[in-house]
Length: 106
Image 1: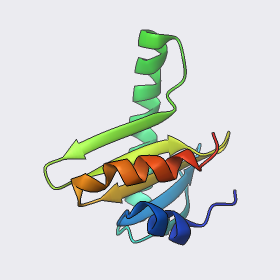
Image 2: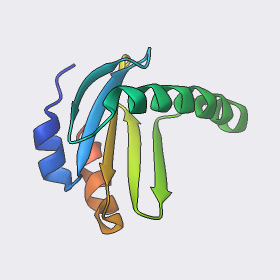
Image 3: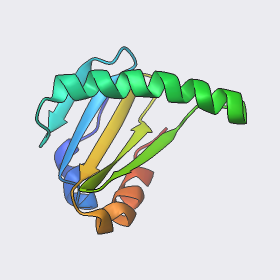
């Protein structure tokens, strides 16, 4: 895994980022509190939502975008073994985050 979270945060305007592996274990994080708990929750959510994607579309889930009242986060496969998550408290940054994630190879 070779992703610089500092550069990814800077280029996207995100407030925080983390990388987890397919087992749900935290690989790295920057700007996110309780990162181990969040990594476990992301892993559990992706397991369920990947099943939904397979049932609905007969394909694997590649990216997930979630919006809350006070922010948003985007989760995307980075490679066969890792997943990256970016979050922002500013909903207007979603476009910048999506553009920055295009540079992350799947």
